[in-house]
Image 1 (spheres, chains in turn purple, cyan):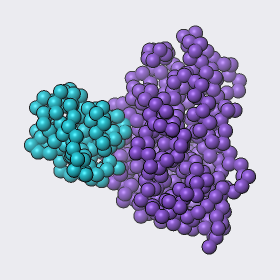
Image 2 (tube, helix red, strand yellow; image 1 turned 90 degrees about the vertical axis):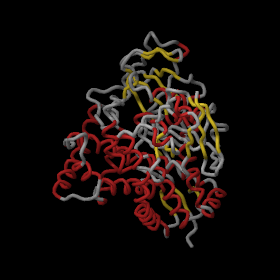
Image 3 (spheres, chains in turn red, orange; image 1 turned 60 degrees about the vertical axis):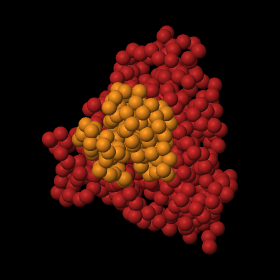
Length: 401
Length: 106
């Protein structure tokens, strides 16, 4: 980050240092996760980057699992790199176990495999509508016109957010993920809280079968949730629901656009879409999960010191050649597709069933209507990196019948 | 060590040596029992280590906690003898226990 001098504390061994700028490393190219994996082949499994204030980075599947399953040492209470004053507080994400558990169980019924199955017809209708809108054009920007719209529409349906606010919400989420300074993060957080305050007030008067109404009425260990608790939960769900599925779906379709054989196969046999979505998740992870070291800790020859940040690069977990052969090859027929892109442990992504269903349903409704498509030649796609990886655009085209 | 048999939906079965004092999920994962995903690693937040416990063992298990019962309610293939294998701590009297693995975990 501009303005911060490189930082190498004395307890970091020289061989553990690998300078990598998580926000702007010039070695990352259009094949974002592929180039990431290639660049980090030169780095130790756990390394210290002196940039962005200085922080640890962990890149192996099993080591990441170790970090995220040890909240006594690696706390989720701060998730900003570099650290900021008054970091955003998110429920249940910022709470270490056991404090996060009751909140997880409040949320679970609305994100469970059962709830997702109940929602499937509605999700199909939404996906169909979005694809139908671009169908006759013979071309679209898949990110802006499809993958940004679908997960956000589904999520807003779950939350009971008015769909006419979609673009405004999307814009705020984008700004949030691009924010670096404390002032920016605070300012955007306030905008998000204002939107949810408005919505909570509305649902107090007009209950529905949405998540906000559930928050207002659910009993948590004999009491009701406070306004602040509801806001803190909305905050993390809002950010998580906006950006993550959009990006994984975008990267997965970027691959699919270049693979006509796979398009034909999936269009002919939609039962393989579960495996397609899972392989997309494995190959194109978009989330890194930061932790704050809260007590000095020695492991794997590394001295983690209290107050240091550790970034678990979840997108590396599916590319780990110790877990999977030929990790950079997209192959839906692999029996095992090991990855931690939903993390693991007490903070494992609550939305994993929903995300998987969204990817499968969108691909299904897309291929039913557009079984063959290709990237628009010469178009620049663009990407951004950080603790979230995003694909900025995916111009594609197809023959109109 | 106690012997525990896992039956798969296709009728095949696998016997494992489970470690007394550890969770059934941990032993099943360590010995590669198919269909036990345990994606959250035993934190009771994912429900992907779901199993059916056969009688007479099911009735001999301590009842599930309220949290485990909540998680089981969220699944798609729940039966009266459903449990999360991460919440079953292997005991000597479980020797010979028979477990069925559900068709899918999500």
